[in-house]
Amino acid sequence: MEKTGGKQSNRLFLMSMRHFRKTWVRFLLLSGVSLCLVLFAPTLHKRLVGIKDCQTLPSALSSATNISRRPPTHCSCKGALLKDFFKNDNDTVRRRQEEYRKHKARTSSSLDLLLVAPANSPLQYPIQGFTVVPLQRTLIPGLGVYAPHRDIYKVSLVASRGLLSVEEPGTDGLVEGDGGNQLNITALSASGLNALLGRVHYTSTVYRLRTGDLVHFLFEKHNVTFPVDIWQPSVPIIFDLGEDINSQVTITTKTFLRYFELNTMISSIRQYYKTMKIIIADDSFDPIKVNGSDIEQYFMPPGQGWFAGRTLAVSQVTTKYFLWVDDDFYFTEKTQIEKLVEVMESMPELDMVSAGVGRSGFSYRMTYEEGQEDEGGCLLRFRGPYKETVPGFPQCSLSNVVINFFLARTDSVRKVLFDPRLKRAAHSQFFVDAVGKLLIASCNHITVDHQSKRPGNEQYHSFRKQSENHQNYLLYFFKNHFSCINLKAD
Image (cartoon, rainbow, N blue to C red):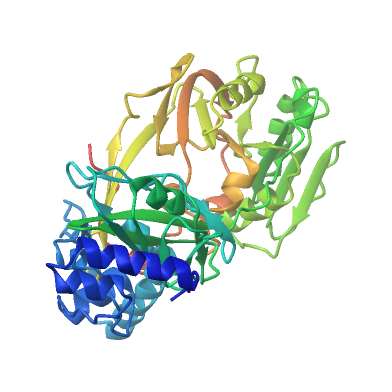
C-alpha cells in the first residue's frame, strides 16, 4: 500500500469515522486493514483475476461475470471425412492433436473472450482501441465514475498480465496497491476520484508480439471488464510503386518440360510489355537457357514441383505486385495489367485480384468452421463469388478461390506461400491456407488467352497425371486440422 502522508491518512480516517459509525465493516476497509474475502470458487478467482494468492478484493467480484467463451461446436459437411483415412494411424492422430494445442497456444489470447457491457453502469472505461506496447507504461484513457453523490468513493482495478499505477497521487485521495496488479482508490469526492483515475497507468508484464489482458473495474456492486491489446508494432515493408507499370509488376511463372510453350508466352508478353521483368522457376530434367532481356531463370533440382517453383519465383520479386501466369498462356490486347493494378490500388485491403483465361474464369467462396478441438474443422467450397463487389469496379467481386491468373501483393503472398510438398496437382490448397489471411477478388474485364494444346510431350503428361490424393488428405487432416472437407459443394 502506498503511504500518502500522515496528515492525509488521518483526515481520511476521521472522516470515515464520522460518516460510517454505523457500519464497522466500512470502518475497517477505510483504515487500511486487509480483508481476505473468499467469496467465490478458487477456479473462478484465478480465471477472472489471475491472482494465485488471497488478496483484498471488492465484493463486486463475486457477482456474475460478463465474460464467456464461444463454446466449440461440432461441424459436418457432405464431403470427405478425413479421420476415416487415418483411423488406424494412432501416431498421426496423436501428433496432430499435440501440434494443434501448440498452435492454439500461439494464436489464442484473452481478447478472444466475449465481453458483454452491463446495463446502466456508472463506470466509464475504454471498450475498444486501448493498445499498449509490451513492458511500456501507458495511460489508461477514459476511466471515470459518474454516480449520484456519496460520502465516500472506492474503486478497484485488477489486471492479470500487467501492473497498475497512479502518476503523482497527490491529495485527491488514498491509493493502495500502487505498482501491483490490484489497485484500490478511495476518495471523498467524485472529482477527486476521477482526477486519480485520469492518471492510472498500465504496464504489461509479458513480452509477446500480440496478446492481450482483461482489466476488471469495480465500484460498489458494479463490475465491468475492458480489454487491453498488448501489441508490438511491426516495422512496415513498403514498396516504391515507381512511375510506370514495369516498376510496379513482375511477371512470374513456373515451367517444366514445356520450353516451346514458355517461349511462345514470352514472345506474346513482349508485344505489350517490352521491359517488364519475367522470373522463371525451372525444374526440368534437361534445362535449357531462355534468352532475352529482363528475364531471370532459376534452375531447380529436377521435378521439385509446381508449388516449390512458385515459392522460389515469388521469393525473387522486388516489386509491389507480381502477376502469376502459367507457362502456356498467351497475352493479347485484352491482357491489361494496368487495369488489375488499378483495382488493387483502389482498395488497399485487397491482397489478390484475378482475371479470366480465354472464355473461362472461375471463382469460389469458402466457409470454414473451427469445430471441436479433438475433431477438427470443416471446410466447404461453393461455386461463385460473394455478392460484394470492389467499390468502383462492378466487374470485380470478392472471392476465396480464383483461377490461375492473378495479380497479388508480394508481401501478402509471402506470408502464406505455396506448400512445396504439393508437386503436381495443386491449386485450391494455396487458397485453403489463405482463408482468413488474404482478401481476394475476381474480375471479368481483363483476360489472357490459353495456348492450344500440342500433341506429343508424353514425358510432361506422364508427370501431370500423377495422383497426390494421399498427400492432399494428409495435409488437410494434419496441417489444416480438418475433420471434413468438401471442395465440390454447389
